Length: 240
Image (cartoon, rainbow, N blue to C red; front, side):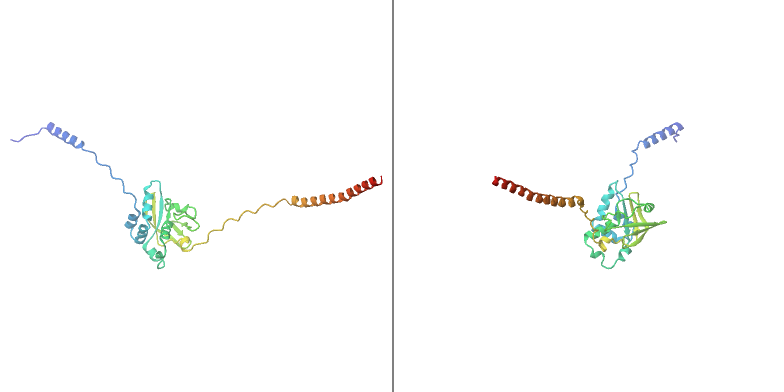
């Protein structure tokens, strides 16, 4: 015997089914994105093996990642390619001590976010994370969409954007920016000249000796007169 379901029973079945389905737990929110990692960004881009090795050996990679974990920090990085490092004179990197290698990397970093259009309005020299602009000057000029970067020893241009997220910008360079402070140190700037001592009043110095001389002369002229007077008085007394 076949059972026939009435439309009312079928509707009730659908109602209970959808009600049970709607009672399921809501879908989980998407996980937050992983923290920014500079070496992973460069690994994904390729052709930055030497730069990655330097970042890791000097611990600068950890410094960058820690800096970027602070939501208020910004950074712009110029990333030389493997070919750029290979174009250096043989033994250049090996001749640098650990401090100089760290300064070389920091010279390629600007502690603010710069989009390509921002380079048109920046003031030279740019302040890098290497510090002193006298020993580590970095200047930027633009021509249309081209951005030229100069260290004083090397002139090169940005050849591509590797990464940009409004906090971090990474730009590709085809040459290594060699800073003057490492590869051609300059003598320190001259110290400011000391202030000259103020001259004494000439009128005061000229008048004083003359007055003293006049006083001495007057005093000398009075002594003979006084002596004669005394002698005369004495003579009078004797004769009396």
